[in-house]
Every structure is written in structure tokens, then in C-alpha cells.
Image (cartoon, rainbow, N blue to C red):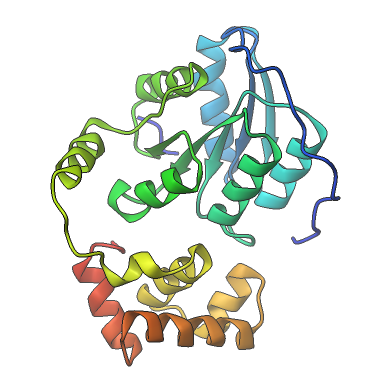
Length: 235
């Protein structure tokens, strides 16, 4: 099983590349994760399958974007919850910068917490960090071929939802940044701790908290925690 700070990138025209499918052996793979052991593990797993692959690594979103502005990539594996700039924000920037690059989101969080949101943002697939090695390889091959990758369980859940018209839960009205802040509040972090983790001011986090409470019609952090637990948005 796979157990898997803030300088803005220079504003350049988005990198473009050929629309033809890449040679799977000579594929260019960028791995963006803040844990060395995860990056090394993924690289080893994929190098065994893609013998001539060119790899790039980045330990945070800013480094990842720097690599993307400078070079073209066929696929990027992106951790969705790194310190600093939010993973959803980085995902949007990646998709805008290289529309032909497939982004496979890698996360420690269960699919029902993030998968649908990242797919709507433009990701080609979503895998969790406890995914078996052969499934990681299969996911990369599928998105390189132009497909979308989700687990069988998530695919079934999405199919069920297509045949029903459930009321939209309040948290789906949150922006990506609000959703990120909401989850951090729900796991018990203070405004100061969240500000430090996201490299934002306490005032900014407080503003996000106010918006979250208004949109979700909640009054206290305890209300928010109960909601997040009930909706399985936190472990």
C-alpha cells in the first residue's frame, strides 16, 4: 500500500503543448506534495511502470506553479491539503496554466470530503493516499489517455445521485477557500492557527468565518463542528 512560502509565480502566458496523447514511456510527471516520503514513493512506483519518464517534484503549491510556468507536463499528482496556498486554489491555477495537462489529486481525506469538489474544479481524477500501488499506476494511465479516474465506490455514489434530486447541502454553497477554512474550524483549530497554516491574517480568517456562518446559517463553532461531523466532512 502507498502511505503516502509564499512568492507569487511570475505572470507569464500559459504554457501550451501538443494535444496528441503522450508516449506513456516518455511521459512527463510532476509530483507536488509537502512530504518527501510521499514524493519518493510515488516516483518509485511510477518509474517502475514508465521506464523513460521525466519526473519533477515540488514541496508546495508555489514551487509546483513555478515548475508549471517553466515547463510542460503530461500529468501532475497534486496533494490537496498542503500548508500555505490551498490545494484547490493551486488546482485552478494548474488547470488554467496548462489545460492539456491531467491533474490527479492525491489526498489523505476520504473521497466524500473532496472528490466531487476537485473534479468540478478541473481535476482529472482523485485518489487517496492509502491507494494500492497498482491502482495509482492505473489512475495515471487512465488520465493520460484522456479519461477521468475515480474509485468504483465513488463512481457508484455519483451514479446514484444522478438519479435523485437531493436538496443541496449548505456547505456546497461555500467557495473553495471558505470550504477549506470551514474544515479547519471543524477540526478544532483557532483563527490564529488557521491564519498561520494558510499564510493569511487573523482578520482575513475571521471574515471567512463570518461568511461561512452566514451561508450555512450557523451561530457557533460548536454548531459548525456538529454539522461537519454529521456530513462526514471531517474524520
